[in-house]
Image (cartoon, rainbow, N blue to C red; front, side):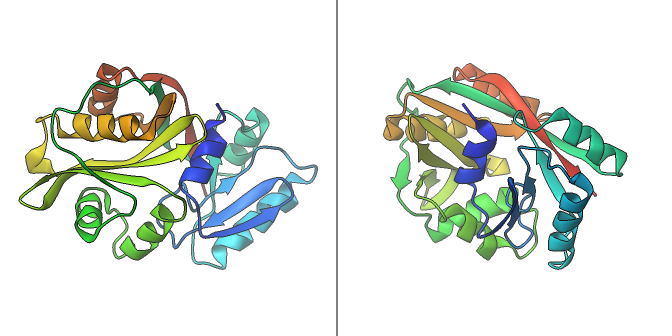
Length: 232
């Protein structure tokens, strides 16, 4: 399972430029996933390639960011560190089976995000000011399903599932603060996986978020690697 490529495809930057084997990704500065360099190899002229990347992001008013995952050459990570790139946002990848119990709550599942779904997700995960339009553009850049547990028409917990061959990428898991500890996220996760019919599923969460990892582990997910970013 090439997690680096799966994440790249499931969370697509709407502007992408290739430089050799690297992909320079930009999406309005919303999330590092869609605004970073996917660099699976080390080019012969590393300094020149890094310079191209830095110019690409500088011209868009962004800091240069590299995604460093399991397929990234260790020497590239070391070279970026030597150039002053800081390590940020260590993230774990968790993988589980496509076999899931029934959700404990009624879950609405749609092929497109509806306004209230977006509002709930952004209320929890909107770390980027007025970037909701760019975030919606990223989400809808590939076919996906959107799930929510609603109460009086208000989504309390939401999630997004991206079918990718035999596996499902689970993204945008978010629960409103006052609705937590009720098993709503568990129901959203189960509904997404069951609707997909995939043999397996994966998700990513920040390494310090032990509460989320405990929830996913209780649903049969286990850590199968991770990645981090290098930011200039």
